[in-house]
Image (cartoon, rainbow, N blue to C red; front, side):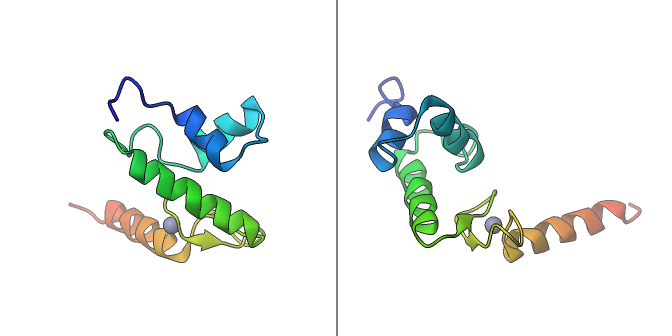
Amino acid sequence: MSEESFDPVALIHQYFPDADDATVQYILWNKTGWPCFFQSGILSLEGQLEAYKAALDMGMDVCEYCSNKVNPTESTICSACKASLDSARAARRRPA
Ligand SMILES: [Zn+2]
């Protein structure tokens, strides 16, 4: 599939046929790595949409940064991403 013909909105409607425009935009920008994480990656976007849909079907949500499942009442990011962010923050505080 060429870059010009790739339509992320149509792909989201395949997974969430009843989603309105606002929901489609929310999913695209908040629940996938679009547009930065994919060079031409329909497979990666599909993978994230599948993970998000599977998590919702189980009453869960997915991490803001990856496809790990999270309990939305506890956190919006998974423990692995939280550990990476904490480590990066700690490294930035250290003097050079
Ligand atoms: Zn994560």
